Length: 133
Ligand code: ZN
Image (tube, rainbow, N blue to C red):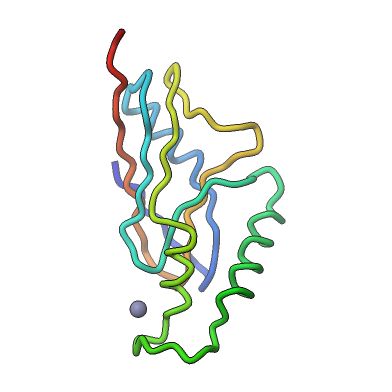
């Protein structure tokens, strides 16, 4: 399944937990793994606290501090900071699925991370079924 993600800011974290939950439900997978993969070089995916939206804001603040927009980058497109943040955060997450549900902690959410928006993006959601005992 491919999720479409429309981003509205240059740097942004979008909670896609509900969309991934829905993908698991419609897959019918009972026991196995769910992979979320972002096929972009300036966007990423991560799992972190979704209960308090300030956490995502703080993560973006720190990423913007450690990877400044203004630096002597060589990449002519001008979006090197977005490429660097993507590598720091990563392109995929793997979440266990048990009894047809994503195994996430109480405070955990899955975030699509935009680092060079706004753009129309994709997140691929794939499943691997555990062997039956
Ligand atoms: Zn680039």
